[in-house]
Length: 240
Image (cartoon, rainbow, N blue to C red; front, side):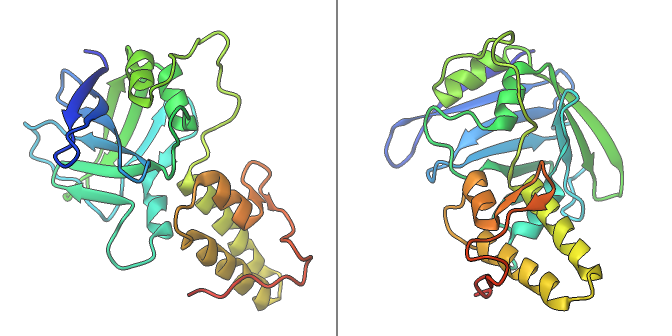
């Protein structure tokens, strides 16, 4: 029971496509995929023998070892239209975006955690309202994910994680918490401007986590936004 790389063939270009995946003895599965737009996606699925079905009412939460949990429910706040584009649930499986634009050779923070970690812990919710747990080993994850990303495996001694993973969901969550705090300042325009800025940035095509932070002028670890360019009177672009 360990991670491995599967080589598939793109039906259009006939080029090889790599996926890193693991399947536990209980039948839980987790895999990593790269889409054509260079985004990295994950997929978690329940055992085939399971009668449970995942619900879209409450998306799963996952974390690597004791690192910060990543709540996929936060992806809903980044959606613009009525149909989800950042996640997809089909019966016993869910696919979800991990990183928006991962250039070749780049290791997204949460994948760095996986490469250096021991296990992925997933909390998931079913159509019947159950809250269940799954654990997936990261044995040989370092080698498999490195091959998937086309990078060298990490050295646990010299490549320690320096900061928690910062993905779209985490940035959005903390910025929206900041906007909510502005509702109690007595100035409604502060909250409105904050929300307008959030929607303007989240609707920008091709946004990466880093460019999302720059657009917001926000560093989630500091829990305070930087003053937008143009000074305090700067008004964010209206929502389209």
